[in-house]
Length: 212
Image (cartoon, rainbow, N blue to C red; front, side, top):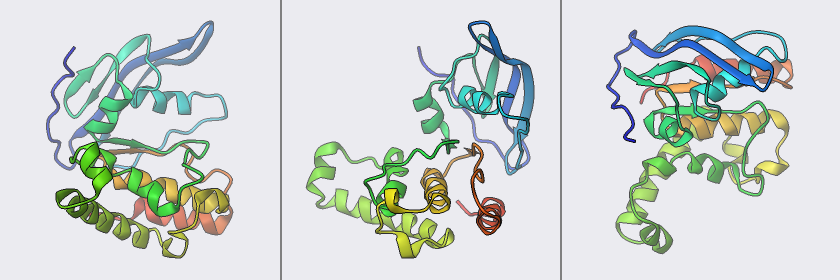
């Protein structure tokens, strides 16, 4: 089935609308007729105690869970069900409650992974890394370096993320999401487990205006 066509959304217009979404796991009702909307350029927070369904709601928005009822309208296109690849290619990026990075890869390579949907040369070209493929990689590498500077993590850019403290891992994961240049950025407990200084830094990165 062809995915519904999406349209460009201007600043201040509704980017995402969640309409009466319900989700259950057997007899456990995680979400019950939840409705809200988010406008482009707006920062919204979902708050509640552990087990309230915050992560489940984010999982519905980007397609990890499929709701039993309701629908999501993203960039003007109504979707009864969203698939993760549709969400990613359509402009939805995500961080996770538990850090989901490639622990053996460097911070730089993890953030570069966020550019994969924007790289158009085929696998053979990318393996050869010559001509147009090399030029494309250099272009995307430049964008990643700008994100690294923005997040102030140049000192650990070549460090495998598995060796980084938790707060820096969360910053790298944010960088990978920003590398996708999303229209909608979903942050699942982005400051959980951080000390006060790390939370202040993360707040600054999240609220800072960014040009696309």
